[in-house]
Length: 570
Ligand code: SRM
Ligand code: SF4
Image 1 (cartoon, helix red, strand yellow):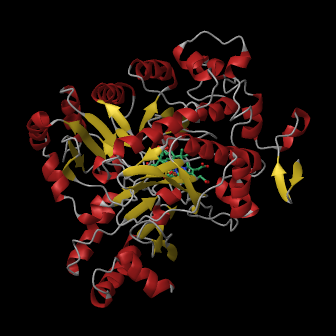
Image 2: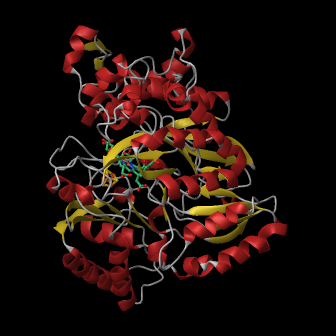
Image 3: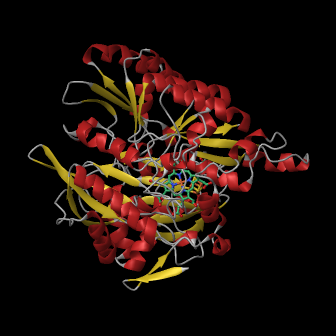
């Protein structure tokens, strides 16, 4: 099962007779005919809304998760009906940018075949929920018409590449932004399975045409995430990525990137061998071809050394901790044939989005609006979905998604600004954005119930009401202006990145959350567990005390995260 190399255990994919001992997914990857499996047959099986288990696993590599409506499980079981199966579809969208045409297409699919909601994710893409099996192919065909796809949005491959989205960050924004797209293409699997299954492309006969020197036939041991940030704003949480790239600008020129490896935010309750970890900086690489080579080889080292036996230990953070950062780095350097230079200095001083209107160096305008937990939908209070559709119909804008689950109406030329602003006013989006408190503007929650099968507690459906109560507490101490980064997840997998917040809630069971405190405002430091399994009353009572003490004891301009870290954990 393992080879010795430099005293490091190297798990390898064993021959077929020994593969029985590997997790099912590891076998399916190798034996699944380059991600085809029997997906086509499963799609035609009208007796169930689900798929064969192996195909369900392979579907992830095509950007889809089989889910069921957990709110309706009981009712369906009573009626002796199968669970209400449907699919979540996640798009591949490096850096989270969409044309008006693409926005309209997604808006319309959401209305017709999904839950009427566009969910902006924490990795700058869009998910649609509730798509029935029979509607999958038509949906992919529409995506294709507007040059979108879902390839490797999920699965053991490189996922959606994130990038600081707002041109306010730097005059070099577009140059840096282009790296996200190039990385996404560089690390995209070569198999034509997606095109054959979903777009009816002719079946490939010469398998050599889809040989994949990066993923070979076993893909990666686990998901892999890359994010690019442009200091001074760490708005993509660069250290939460398997590979984080920090753009270094000198004399108004992009000179290269500091590389940080080994970020990952998930852990499992009761399994002390699992933990959240921030990425470690290993050095600087020049912009251009050297950067791409270095990225590629970081991925190949994880491919070859990552644990393929225990999925709980398969992320790069564990590979690095087992090998040691220096050995991992040396192995990358050996493969890329040059060395990392010493990391270059940079500073982060914020992590939040720039709300409202901002202008880029070319004079174009950008409006960032508040979208609570990334849920673009029409409610009784506010019709964000209709407003954005009307804006898209002008065909005078693009849309950029932030890694904080927000939307930027972007690339608005000065002559069109009034027309767009009028629509934002008409739908009360500006008022809605201005009225959101600093706390709410800096908050995020993961999807959780009713679609996420791993959720232990509510998250995006509950968080808004909890925040209202926390806002009342902050007002009590005259702290309403504090932009405390507050995040919730429905389980410890960390999809809403609650481990890198100043106040983090992690669901432990229905109505119960662990309270984590002491993370910093800029995302350099993980928070720590403060109290376990609190219900709402207990959460509010803890925060009431802490806000009161913070008000009295804080140093000038001290952030809540730094204050609690010093007070509770130092
Ligand atoms: Fe996540 C699994 C939602 C960002 C760590 N994540 C899931 C699944 C697919 C549940 C499942 O496996 O069946 C969730 C689907 C819920 C649903 O109904 O839609 C899910 N993750 C999300 C999203 C949509 C949360 C959101 O509300 O925005 C985010 C989609 C990102 C994207 O567009 O690609 C999302 N997930 C993250 C992040 C944050 C990030 O990447 O910046 C993390 C923590 C960072 C990390 O990867 O360490 C994250 N998701 C996980 C994990 C834990 C992985 C691990 O190392 O153990 C799982 C579970 C797994 O992979 O086994 C998971
Ligand atoms: Fe689901 Fe847990 Fe991720 Fe939330 S953090 S979406 S509950 S896996």
